[in-house]
Length: 389
Image (cartoon, rainbow, N blue to C red):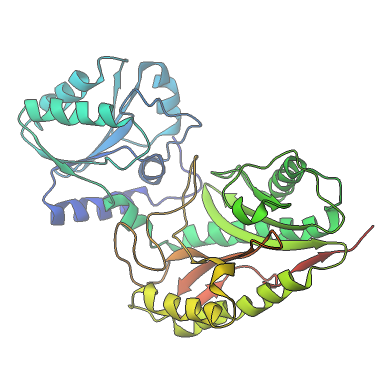
């Protein structure tokens, strides 16, 4: 069975069951791949969107029932921690799930169903809800119950995130020595992955983001391309170190050859916003107050049209297609949060110049502790120079 070096599954299940009791749920159908990993250790590179692969947490008696494809039987037995395994086929999943509930005395249960997950497809989730309701169950929203518990990391989880942050720092330092004019964005992305993996990382939930050239200021979320770096390019490189699927995010901006003075000035002007965030972050408060002050710091020093975003989002366990969590430092996500020990987020200052056509970006992973806000990276948030060679 999967363990990934952690022995926290019983405690996690207990927390979920307590939250279910407060929400009045008898059962919770978990479909989000990161939530499945958190509760059972199950992970995969592909989740069949035509099937409601997931686990059901039953409140009384406390147990976990795992639902998976018939062709995954051996895989599920090897990679998951659960009490029972129920298998289904394409086209027959909904009645199989309803029968499994009925066989276990859950036909009339109040069931929370995760619908915001990227898997399965929405009609499949609705088919499960319809089948359960036809059997007498009451189906209600089950989103964010597990996600909110995952927000506040245990010491063992933080150990993995800090390790991932160290791997990311080492990879970024190595990039400063290895970048060359003539390398393509795709070659840089491949180099990033090699440096990360050599340092102990796994694949991240997204490929590295490499922003260079005259469209960099609008290419914030583009795939790496075959574009080659020029002798005086500005390039921002954004990636995550990953340990046991726990992500630590890092982005820095490099200047090849002669540093671009405007890009350097923008990054220098925004760099002080992170210490401002640290200074004002208070345990028990919502992060939006300190974040608003950090944002003001940037806007007081940089013209608004050159600020793409100041903010951040929660980090932790992530699987493709993305590492972006469901809560934000602006506290405008799906659920509200407060600064508590173990809360992990990134913090971004994304700056652009539409006229000079560059992006200058710095992103860090931050961790709330009993002693305040900790920044994982030791790299300066200013421009990193790559001397001409």
